[in-house]
Figure 1 (spheres, rainbow, N blue to C red):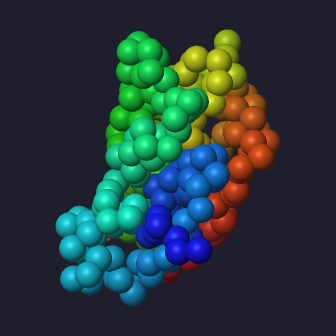
Figure 2 (figure 1 turned 45 degrees about the horizontal axis):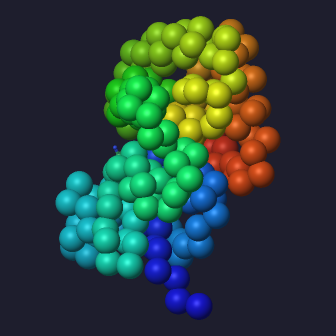
Length: 208
Ligand SMILES: N[C@@H](CCC(=O)N[C@@H](CS)C(=O)NCC(=O)O)C(=O)O
């Protein structure tokens, strides 16, 4: 059967991994293309024609091209999650999901994701600042999760899928999660989902 949905990804990209979690949660079949970021395949003319910022993830859904992970997740949920399991319709709950999606481009990107990137891919930034941003975010998220199993409402939503990967991989950025018991329990709940697939672990200095 011809695949109609193509997923452009990179195996160590947390931004791409959150999309993969949703693709699997929705049980969508897709054609996976691994883009070699080290060789700058994401900056070729063909790739830039899909995403002018030259980054993964990108999807091509039968001619509809969407880039940026949370935009892709929103598109997939609106298109294929007809029961609205992962993106609640009620305005207040919908907005709550959006607040957590916004965190992926704020303190998650500049905190745990940045600390991991600095450690693994040796980008020239200050890891101490990224680690502090991460701890400030994790403190709030841990308190938020104390009385609840999921970030929004009483079931798993796009909020959990979007926030999971870079929090789970925070230790790769030198961020110890031991002080955050509610986050650790939430990570375990995520990893127990039948669709769950882990992003491979990386070592410091992988691209040194
Ligand atoms: N806000 C974007 C960020 C995407 C992003 O930073 N992608 C990284 C991989 S995790 C990338 O492609 N980097 C290669 C580059 O910037 O050249 C999203 O959520 O999709």
